[in-house]
Image (cartoon, rainbow, N blue to C red; front, top):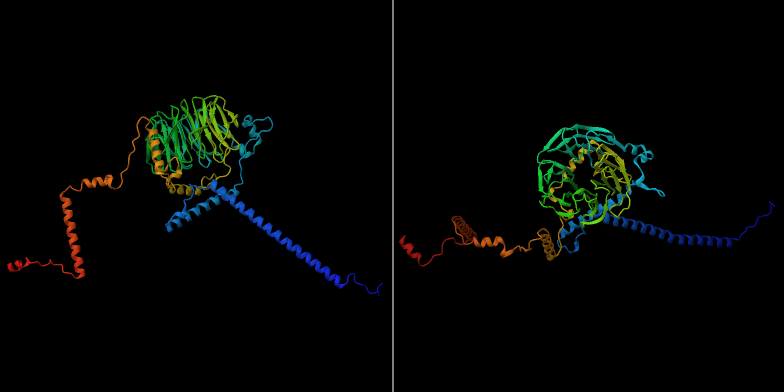
Length: 567
């Protein structure tokens, strides 16, 4: 009823106790939640630390350069120790930043995948063209040029421009993706090979007698009369060197930035029409008619390495982008994969016909051309493959040249009937470094990159088998170094006996022996010099005495009285 006072449900004492219980429970819950939050925070920090450590390990394994750092603690020179510590810190930071930048590389390469009983090598270009996008479809084309073939071709380093040269004198350069023609000319003589130089503004052509350099408009810039009857051309982009080899068997290096002939080596193995360069160390590989492959550098007049690769003439050579593996083919019908680090065979295959051309893509796909047939092999360097990745047939048109386009899944083929551009999924590198090669560079960027590359040009003398040996101290024992020199000498002189030459130092050196022999030789010049030195010494002595206040006159003796009486 409204007039009846209501009684409280709980008395004040009970409500206070319940309130204390609730406060205690909330305090206990907060106390139990605090360690859980701290533990979660510690686990997050541990995961972040492990991620950072994994990045550092990846950087040390993939992006580090050179050998292990020197033991800085044992260095007594404080200035040198500080300099080395700062250098090592900069190298470590650069490697970590390079590893962290991998997260920005969102693109990945894709390959053909077969389902069920299908085989990837059965897929034809016409079938692929029906199922790809319009951009990829535009990269699949054929240029029918049967009048001036067979054709050789070359792509620029950024993969944007294509240069073609027909055997009967037809030369053309164009932006193959947009179809914009840069120049087209007919030299009316045999064209054996074409090669882009540092960028798309200049290219070299090996013609019937001499090698010529043209600009992007087709105007002749230079006639290299020292390069006679060249069959193959190679350009070293970091050294600005054009290397040629031809019928005379001479390997020649021409500096395209200064116009000087840097080196000229006689191979002594006859005509040569097989050449490739190692992108890792810029060493030139030549294939010869006796089945050997020789490795050359401008600073050595003899081959750095001589390998017996085939039982017949070497037909083609290709080297992967890492400079680790080399593929060779010969007239003996074999194709071999070599490990350049150990000079041993990794895999060997028999081809249906002697393969005449090879090419290796940025992702390690190996293209083999024999007659009108083309086969592309996947993972050929890791394990022995039983079947190819893709195949193609140019009916009635033998293959003349093969080149993978950088940063594109495209293989350019030059054959007797013209040029063909084939799509090979997974062959190109999906992520490019704009500081190294930029497919989308503007005119201003091209000019700046050309200036920077000229400023950073590497001297030809720095081309060695092991680029990391420059600036490195050989810390091997003296006996080990002597044994290496002895084995090297015995390998180069198998019929002669090794006689060690001891370099004399100290008292038995050649300079000391010469000085001892000439010590007793008296001539007018030496006597004049001796008198002059004696006079200078006496004058210095008198000056010293004057400075000390001593008498500079001769000391008086008993015989001086006779001089006084005479006066």
